[in-house]
Length: 140
Image (cartoon, rainbow, N blue to C red; front, top):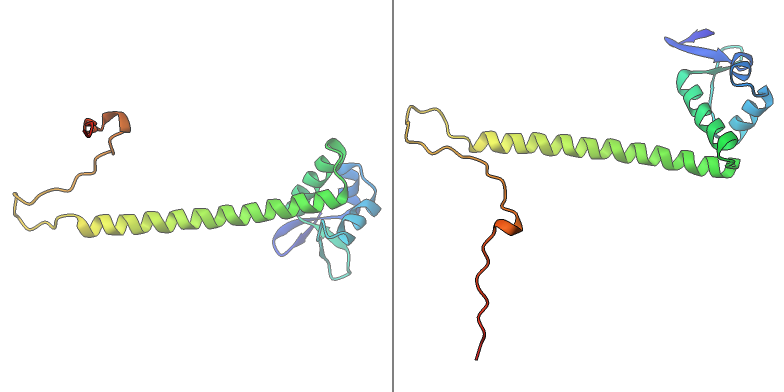
């Protein structure tokens, strides 16, 4: 194990031994664009914990599910897109919550000493079964 920019990094021989795969397989995954280990000053491949997590997904897909490398690439790309969309959704929800909080704060009555000032209360919407509908009348 080597240290690279504050993160643990593992050499190809250690990774190959740990996951019971040939180093050439790791090189193949790199050529196919499935893995992108960093390099040391001496050009040695260094695998981070994130690389190992990705490798575990690759191995599960190939070993347990029988997915070929083209399929693995598609699945990994889809996972990355889904993670990016998830981050966008979380950001949107965060912005929406902040905006709603600001609007609610803007509509709160100010403390002016007037005890008769109305207080805004939020009510839950009535469900359809609670809503009274007008009776239908026949037109003659």
